[in-house]
Amino acid sequence: MKKIPLLVVCGPTASGKTAVAVELAKRFNGEVVSADSMQIYKGLCIATAKPNEQEMRGVPHHLIDFLGPDRSFSVADYVRLAGEIIRDINERGKLPIICGGTGLYISSLVENVRFDDTGSDENIRKRLSREAQELGNHSLWKKLESVDPETAAKVHENNLPRVIRALEVYEMTGVKLSLHKKNSRSEQSPYNACIIGLTCADREKLYDNINKRVDDMLEKGLVQECRLVYEQHKLATAYQAIGFKELVPYFEGSQSLEECVDKIKLETRHYAKRQLTWFRNLNGIQWVETDKFDSFEKILKNIENIVAKTEIMCYNID
Image 1 (cartoon, one colour):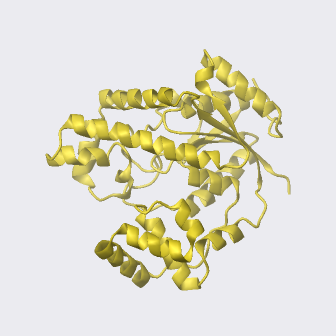
Image 2 (cartoon, rainbow, N blue to C red):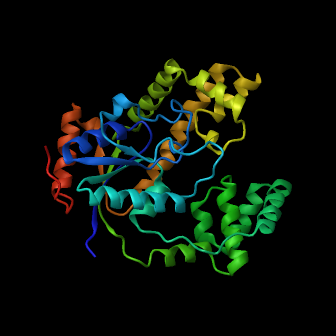
Image 3 (cartoon, rainbow, N blue to C red):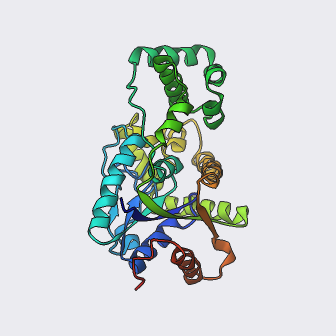
């Protein structure tokens, strides 16, 4: 079966992905499909840096601002929905452009990961959750390491849902989650993907961009936006977003706004480092170090040259 051309623009937060993806969509007759695990939720437009109408510049964007903040949304859900949208865009003669920083979404989509159908066992999950509460996250992670070291090496001990899920799958099936994942990649990808990774050669430049972005969010009303949703939906899934949860101590009166803003900047920098680590392991990614160019147009020209060498060039540049 003929593969679908797919252009991917990924990279750490504050690397300029949205502006690049929109301009490429203009030049390649494309539409943007978001790959951001927080932008899917309604609300928190400032905190999650959702592109506004002016930034979209008339380019259709998909999988943004469509899900209630209290709804769960898995990577399997993303791969299914994004796949449907990509096929529709392609059938209409346009180029699908994935844009985002959620590495798990992008790698699972591009590599055509098939998710296990082992289901779930609420009793196992509750027991493992209690164990984590009583003995600590590290103890539960060590348990995972003993049965599935490959998965444990990729999951931080504080990422409790993933640790519990990996142990749950092992208890239910007797098969390691890492083996499930290897088997899930047995089918060929339906995409001819050109993957562009945006970053800065100078890491301090990226961190400076992050700090400036947070300051800009504050000027746009980040605190007011987050206070409103905090009062309405304190426990919603969507509000684990960086930029919201760090402000909760300020709303509760236990920390100053300055302390919380510093925490947002720190956590965002840490998140950017994790994103870079993930994307470096993505097969076929071609990096563009944006701080090596003295204009936005030169960045785009460099990307066009990369794309010109791939099979997605069936789409004409305006």
